[in-house]
Length: 291
Image (tube, rainbow, N blue to C red; front, side, top):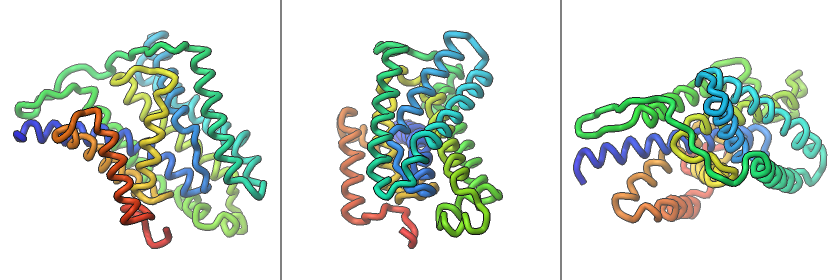
Protein backbone atom coordinates (compact mmCIF):
# COMPACT_ATOMS: atom_id res chain seq x y z
CA UNK A 1 0.00 0.00 0.00
CA UNK A 2 1.45 3.35 -1.05
CA UNK A 3 1.45 6.42 1.19
CA UNK A 4 -1.14 8.08 -1.07
CA UNK A 5 -3.46 5.08 -0.78
CA UNK A 6 -3.01 4.99 2.98
CA UNK A 7 -3.80 8.70 3.24
CA UNK A 8 -6.89 8.30 1.03
CA UNK A 9 -8.21 5.41 3.15
CA UNK A 10 -7.48 7.35 6.33
CA UNK A 11 -9.33 10.48 5.18
CA UNK A 12 -12.26 8.48 3.80
CA UNK A 13 -12.48 6.59 7.09
CA UNK A 14 -12.54 9.81 9.11
CA UNK A 15 -15.24 11.27 6.84
CA UNK A 16 -17.44 8.17 7.07
CA UNK A 17 -16.75 7.91 10.77
CA UNK A 18 -17.85 11.50 11.35
CA UNK A 19 -21.31 10.65 9.98
CA UNK A 20 -21.48 7.49 12.09
CA UNK A 21 -20.42 9.53 15.12
CA UNK A 22 -23.13 12.15 14.53
CA UNK A 23 -25.85 9.49 14.23
CA UNK A 24 -24.55 7.31 17.06
CA UNK A 25 -23.97 10.16 19.50
CA UNK A 26 -27.60 11.25 19.09
CA UNK A 27 -28.84 7.74 19.89
CA UNK A 28 -26.41 7.48 22.82
CA UNK A 29 -27.49 10.85 24.23
CA UNK A 30 -31.17 9.81 24.27
CA UNK A 31 -30.46 6.39 25.75
CA UNK A 32 -28.02 7.72 28.33
CA UNK A 33 -30.57 10.24 29.60
CA UNK A 34 -33.92 8.48 29.18
CA UNK A 35 -33.00 4.78 28.71
CA UNK A 36 -35.05 4.90 25.49
CA UNK A 37 -33.84 3.33 22.24
CA UNK A 38 -35.37 5.41 19.46
CA UNK A 39 -35.87 3.15 16.44
CA UNK A 40 -37.27 6.11 14.48
CA UNK A 41 -33.96 7.97 14.66
CA UNK A 42 -33.04 6.93 11.12
CA UNK A 43 -36.26 8.43 9.80
CA UNK A 44 -35.32 11.79 11.30
CA UNK A 45 -32.21 11.61 9.14
CA UNK A 46 -34.29 10.61 6.13
CA UNK A 47 -36.78 13.44 6.59
CA UNK A 48 -33.92 15.92 6.99
CA UNK A 49 -32.57 14.72 3.64
CA UNK A 50 -35.89 15.41 1.95
CA UNK A 51 -36.20 18.80 3.65
CA UNK A 52 -32.78 19.98 2.49
CA UNK A 53 -33.67 18.68 -0.99
CA UNK A 54 -36.89 20.72 -0.89
CA UNK A 55 -35.43 23.98 0.40
CA UNK A 56 -31.95 24.00 -1.16
CA UNK A 57 -32.68 22.34 -4.51
CA UNK A 58 -36.38 22.58 -5.37
CA UNK A 59 -36.93 26.08 -3.94
CA UNK A 60 -33.36 27.24 -4.55
CA UNK A 61 -32.79 28.79 -1.11
CA UNK A 62 -29.24 29.62 0.03
CA UNK A 63 -27.57 26.72 1.82
CA UNK A 64 -27.43 28.41 5.24
CA UNK A 65 -31.12 29.37 5.16
CA UNK A 66 -32.14 25.92 3.89
CA UNK A 67 -30.04 24.22 6.57
CA UNK A 68 -31.41 26.45 9.33
CA UNK A 69 -35.07 25.84 8.47
CA UNK A 70 -34.40 22.11 8.02
CA UNK A 71 -32.82 21.87 11.46
CA UNK A 72 -35.59 23.95 13.03
CA UNK A 73 -38.29 21.67 11.61
CA UNK A 74 -36.48 18.47 12.59
CA UNK A 75 -35.82 19.76 16.13
CA UNK A 76 -39.52 20.53 16.55
CA UNK A 77 -40.37 17.09 15.16
CA UNK A 78 -37.96 15.43 17.61
CA UNK A 79 -39.55 17.29 20.51
CA UNK A 80 -43.02 16.37 19.24
CA UNK A 81 -42.11 12.68 19.03
CA UNK A 82 -40.94 12.73 22.63
CA UNK A 83 -43.92 14.65 24.01
CA UNK A 84 -46.65 12.91 22.01
CA UNK A 85 -45.29 9.39 21.56
CA UNK A 86 -42.67 8.62 24.21
CA UNK A 87 -43.69 10.64 27.27
CA UNK A 88 -47.17 9.07 27.71
CA UNK A 89 -45.65 5.58 27.58
CA UNK A 90 -43.01 6.30 30.23
CA UNK A 91 -45.73 6.41 32.89
CA UNK A 92 -46.55 2.72 32.37
CA UNK A 93 -44.85 -0.17 34.14
CA UNK A 94 -43.96 -2.06 30.94
CA UNK A 95 -42.82 1.07 29.11
CA UNK A 96 -39.52 -0.31 27.65
CA UNK A 97 -41.27 -2.77 25.33
CA UNK A 98 -44.04 -0.32 24.48
CA UNK A 99 -41.54 2.40 23.58
CA UNK A 100 -39.65 0.03 21.28
CA UNK A 101 -42.90 -1.03 19.60
CA UNK A 102 -44.05 2.59 19.28
CA UNK A 103 -40.81 3.86 17.73
CA UNK A 104 -40.67 0.93 15.29
CA UNK A 105 -44.26 1.70 14.30
CA UNK A 106 -43.39 5.37 13.93
CA UNK A 107 -40.42 4.43 11.74
CA UNK A 108 -42.68 2.44 9.39
CA UNK A 109 -45.24 5.26 9.37
CA UNK A 110 -42.64 7.89 8.44
CA UNK A 111 -41.14 5.69 5.72
CA UNK A 112 -44.58 5.08 4.23
CA UNK A 113 -45.40 8.79 4.47
CA UNK A 114 -42.19 9.66 2.63
CA UNK A 115 -43.04 7.20 -0.15
CA UNK A 116 -46.52 8.70 -0.41
CA UNK A 117 -45.27 12.30 -0.60
CA UNK A 118 -42.01 11.99 -2.54
CA UNK A 119 -42.33 8.62 -4.23
CA UNK A 120 -39.89 5.72 -4.33
CA UNK A 121 -37.37 7.21 -6.76
CA UNK A 122 -33.89 8.14 -5.58
CA UNK A 123 -33.21 11.89 -5.84
CA UNK A 124 -29.79 13.48 -6.10
CA UNK A 125 -28.65 16.61 -4.29
CA UNK A 126 -25.78 18.56 -5.94
CA UNK A 127 -22.60 19.34 -4.02
CA UNK A 128 -22.90 22.33 -1.71
CA UNK A 129 -19.14 22.93 -1.64
CA UNK A 130 -17.23 22.95 -4.91
CA UNK A 131 -13.56 22.63 -5.69
CA UNK A 132 -10.80 20.10 -5.05
CA UNK A 133 -8.35 19.86 -2.15
CA UNK A 134 -4.90 18.61 -3.20
CA UNK A 135 -2.86 16.83 -0.53
CA UNK A 136 0.31 15.50 -2.14
CA UNK A 137 -0.83 13.05 -4.81
CA UNK A 138 -4.34 12.90 -3.34
CA UNK A 139 -7.23 14.93 -4.77
CA UNK A 140 -10.32 15.17 -2.55
CA UNK A 141 -13.57 17.14 -3.21
CA UNK A 142 -14.19 19.99 -0.78
CA UNK A 143 -17.64 18.52 -0.08
CA UNK A 144 -16.07 15.48 1.62
CA UNK A 145 -13.58 17.57 3.60
CA UNK A 146 -16.41 19.86 4.71
CA UNK A 147 -18.33 16.86 6.08
CA UNK A 148 -15.49 16.02 8.45
CA UNK A 149 -14.79 19.60 9.54
CA UNK A 150 -18.44 20.56 10.14
CA UNK A 151 -19.26 17.27 11.90
CA UNK A 152 -16.24 17.70 14.16
CA UNK A 153 -17.28 21.27 15.00
CA UNK A 154 -20.89 20.22 15.76
CA UNK A 155 -19.83 17.36 18.03
CA UNK A 156 -17.32 19.60 19.75
CA UNK A 157 -20.07 22.16 20.40
CA UNK A 158 -22.31 19.41 21.81
CA UNK A 159 -19.51 18.25 24.11
CA UNK A 160 -19.04 21.81 25.38
CA UNK A 161 -22.78 22.09 26.05
CA UNK A 162 -22.87 18.76 27.88
CA UNK A 163 -19.78 19.24 30.03
CA UNK A 164 -19.31 23.00 30.36
CA UNK A 165 -22.79 24.55 30.64
CA UNK A 166 -25.69 24.59 33.09
CA UNK A 167 -27.91 22.77 30.60
CA UNK A 168 -25.31 20.03 30.33
CA UNK A 169 -25.14 19.65 34.10
CA UNK A 170 -28.93 19.40 34.22
CA UNK A 171 -28.93 16.73 31.51
CA UNK A 172 -26.20 14.72 33.25
CA UNK A 173 -27.93 15.02 36.62
CA UNK A 174 -31.19 13.76 35.12
CA UNK A 175 -29.34 10.90 33.42
CA UNK A 176 -27.76 9.82 36.70
CA UNK A 177 -30.96 9.91 38.78
CA UNK A 178 -34.16 11.41 37.37
CA UNK A 179 -36.07 11.16 40.67
CA UNK A 180 -33.33 12.94 42.63
CA UNK A 181 -33.12 15.59 39.91
CA UNK A 182 -36.87 16.19 40.15
CA UNK A 183 -36.59 16.42 43.93
CA UNK A 184 -34.27 19.42 43.60
CA UNK A 185 -36.50 21.13 41.04
CA UNK A 186 -35.19 19.90 37.70
CA UNK A 187 -38.10 19.25 35.29
CA UNK A 188 -37.12 15.81 34.01
CA UNK A 189 -39.87 15.82 31.36
CA UNK A 190 -38.53 18.99 29.76
CA UNK A 191 -34.99 17.63 29.93
CA UNK A 192 -36.10 14.52 28.05
CA UNK A 193 -37.71 16.72 25.40
CA UNK A 194 -34.55 18.81 25.08
CA UNK A 195 -32.42 15.68 24.69
CA UNK A 196 -34.67 14.35 21.92
CA UNK A 197 -34.43 17.72 20.17
CA UNK A 198 -30.62 17.73 20.35
CA UNK A 199 -30.55 14.15 19.07
CA UNK A 200 -32.83 15.10 16.17
CA UNK A 201 -30.56 18.06 15.35
CA UNK A 202 -27.54 15.75 15.17
CA UNK A 203 -29.43 13.49 12.75
CA UNK A 204 -30.38 16.58 10.74
CA UNK A 205 -26.78 17.76 10.49
CA UNK A 206 -25.72 14.27 9.37
CA UNK A 207 -28.38 14.27 6.64
CA UNK A 208 -27.47 17.74 5.37
CA UNK A 209 -23.79 16.79 5.11
CA UNK A 210 -24.51 13.36 3.64
CA UNK A 211 -27.25 14.15 1.10
CA UNK A 212 -24.91 15.35 -1.71
CA UNK A 213 -22.96 12.07 -1.51
CA UNK A 214 -25.88 9.61 -1.55
CA UNK A 215 -29.30 9.70 -3.16
CA UNK A 216 -32.16 10.84 -0.94
CA UNK A 217 -34.76 8.07 -0.64
CA UNK A 218 -37.33 6.79 1.88
CA UNK A 219 -35.00 4.03 3.14
CA UNK A 220 -31.78 6.01 3.52
CA UNK A 221 -32.11 6.16 7.30
CA UNK A 222 -32.24 2.39 7.84
CA UNK A 223 -28.57 1.62 7.19
CA UNK A 224 -27.41 4.59 9.23
CA UNK A 225 -29.68 3.60 12.11
CA UNK A 226 -28.01 0.16 12.13
CA UNK A 227 -24.56 1.73 12.06
CA UNK A 228 -25.67 4.16 14.78
CA UNK A 229 -26.71 1.29 17.03
CA UNK A 230 -23.40 -0.47 16.28
CA UNK A 231 -21.55 2.70 17.30
CA UNK A 232 -23.55 2.98 20.53
CA UNK A 233 -22.79 -0.64 21.44
CA UNK A 234 -19.10 -0.25 20.59
CA UNK A 235 -18.77 2.96 22.56
CA UNK A 236 -20.78 1.80 25.57
CA UNK A 237 -24.52 2.28 25.93
CA UNK A 238 -25.35 5.86 26.84
CA UNK A 239 -21.80 7.25 26.47
CA UNK A 240 -21.73 10.35 24.25
CA UNK A 241 -17.93 10.48 24.06
CA UNK A 242 -17.75 6.72 23.57
CA UNK A 243 -20.18 6.93 20.64
CA UNK A 244 -18.11 9.66 18.98
CA UNK A 245 -14.89 7.65 19.36
CA UNK A 246 -16.57 4.43 18.21
CA UNK A 247 -18.05 6.20 15.18
CA UNK A 248 -14.61 7.23 13.94
CA UNK A 249 -13.21 3.79 14.76
CA UNK A 250 -15.95 2.03 12.79
CA UNK A 251 -15.46 4.37 9.83
CA UNK A 252 -11.72 3.66 9.77
CA UNK A 253 -12.28 -0.09 10.00
CA UNK A 254 -14.69 0.01 7.07
CA UNK A 255 -12.38 2.19 5.01
CA UNK A 256 -9.24 0.09 5.51
CA UNK A 257 -11.15 -3.16 4.98
CA UNK A 258 -11.50 -2.15 1.32
CA UNK A 259 -7.72 -2.56 0.95
CA UNK A 260 -7.93 -6.24 1.89
CA UNK A 261 -11.41 -7.32 0.76
CA UNK A 262 -14.02 -6.33 -1.86
CA UNK A 263 -16.00 -3.19 -0.99
CA UNK A 264 -19.17 -5.29 -0.68
CA UNK A 265 -17.62 -6.87 2.43
CA UNK A 266 -17.16 -3.65 4.39
CA UNK A 267 -20.41 -4.15 6.35
CA UNK A 268 -19.46 -7.76 7.06
CA UNK A 269 -16.09 -6.64 8.41
CA UNK A 270 -17.68 -3.90 10.52
CA UNK A 271 -20.28 -6.13 12.16
CA UNK A 272 -17.78 -8.97 12.63
CA UNK A 273 -15.64 -6.53 14.56
CA UNK A 274 -18.70 -5.51 16.59
CA UNK A 275 -19.45 -9.15 17.48
CA UNK A 276 -15.83 -9.69 18.50
CA UNK A 277 -15.90 -6.62 20.75
CA UNK A 278 -19.16 -7.71 22.40
CA UNK A 279 -17.61 -11.12 23.03
CA UNK A 280 -14.60 -9.60 24.81
CA UNK A 281 -16.13 -6.43 26.30
CA UNK A 282 -19.93 -6.73 26.58
CA UNK A 283 -20.24 -3.15 27.90
CA UNK A 284 -18.37 -1.64 24.95
CA UNK A 285 -14.86 -0.43 24.30
CA UNK A 286 -15.22 2.93 26.06
CA UNK A 287 -17.74 2.08 28.79
CA UNK A 288 -17.04 3.60 32.17
CA UNK A 289 -17.24 2.01 35.59
CA UNK A 290 -20.91 2.93 35.94
CA UNK A 291 -21.80 0.65 32.98
